[in-house]
Image (cartoon, rainbow, N blue to C red; front, side):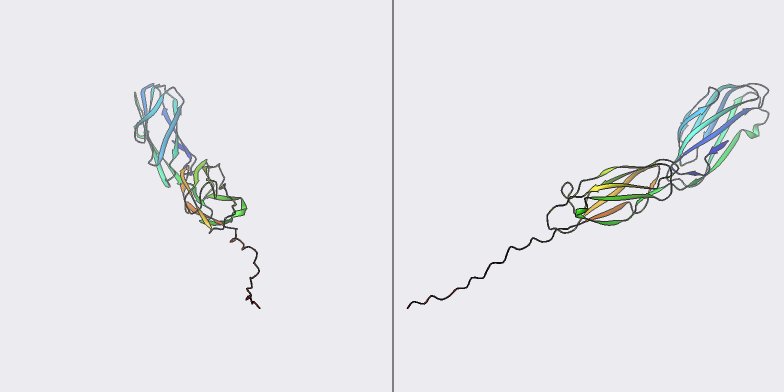
Length: 250
């Protein structure tokens, strides 16, 4: 049995290759391979080389069956899995084989493969708070990953909350950032409205959520402050003072 890749990054694909060998000389029938996947690994699919079949039969258990295997032949099974993003450290996959017929060595019918799992990329805002002038027109918000991924990572983002009014002070933003293999930084934009009102600085709350292929780091929430650029209204022109004189009758 072997694994690939090893080490593997959490959130990535992991392939187990299991060889079931009949050293001969007689044909074996009712050949069965039972694989117990480690906790923190999810089964996706399989492939095999001799017309057998595989499928889940219990939690983390994959059972593969083959009608017969001639002497001096190998039946190879490939199990395609994904390592859960929260998994880290050493994991072990276990497999065993059985069949009807003569087995010259029953001591080699089980095996174990250990794999080293490194941490999944953690997504976070580049800063917890930032400020932009009202006249800038647009704010660019950056989200970073803690490490370069070996697979695609998706992170949802959204704006909402704060003292700024969506639709009049800014255009709400929501979507998904997709990081390809090796990419560690992505950005999204928020359109800012430049009004003529004299008002206090206002805030927009930002968040990231629902990571796929990664985890959430810190900060996963941020504040964007819109700095007002409008002064108080100017007073009108000064009026000449009115001087009243007494009226004297002669």
